[in-house]
Length: 302
Ligand code: FDA
Image (cartoon, rainbow, N blue to C red; front, top):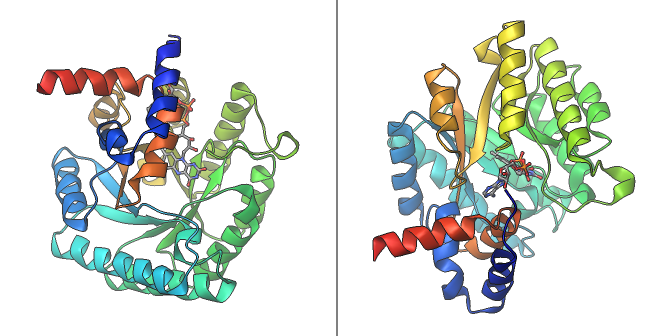
């Protein structure tokens, strides 16, 4: 279905208006501003049978003090997850906890967060940002995975380098989320064609399974999900080796419930925090159809 021009115009208009105006449009994608709001949403998702990974919104932190404060918040989150007995891991963006400041800063902070993940019997996923930090992010992951199985990272199917990265990483046990990739990368280093990205995605998933490595399939693409499910069933891939993942608030028309009914694990990526604005605008741009959905809900609530 094509998206009416009015939706694109509305998104442009929302981005020019004060932030409070964007809030109703951001709401479906973000679990609130506080830890308490996020925990409440996670509980509801867990009750419905979803696993969760939670993320504090923000990136490109420029001060050490702020990077340390965010690190402490992540550690506190692990404590709360344990206290509340939630099925919830944590996802962290390296630039949120100091990658733009220095290698020492980010390593110290990821080290602290991982230690807390281990102490609380939990898991830490390092999100993948733009190609300017792919090498550094892989290095961070390689460093910590030597001594821990409580850590994983993300690789992006749109990058030409991804199969080589995977081959290099595969010599030891790894835990990877595969996604298409969200950043606007130059043509010389990335696939632009949707079919090529999907082909690379499937190749990646197959390699991970062949090596007996756990892979999280992060996508809302129903055709890709169909293809993955067909392959999983035909090849009898062990359910211990994968899970599906989606972003909080993305309408999936009952597909996730169906996956769970069929015995597959589904994890929802739940972002929260005061820095909700940039994330939500990226999500709106990704799917302008959400405008209709939010407006519909606004009118229903009246
Ligand atoms: P595609 O873009 O083809 O979308 C498929 C369908 O879903 C379309 O109909 C589309 O409109 C709809 N859809 C997609 N996104 C939507 C949205 N936000 N709102 C409403 N509808 C939407 N990227 C990255 O670079 N680094 C990372 O670490 C992560 N992490 C991550 C975790 C999880 C759990 C998910 C689901 C995604 C990511 N991503 C990511 C983002 C990912 O790379 C990608 O940009 C989006 O998931 C969109 O790609 P799809 O695979 O969903 O397909």
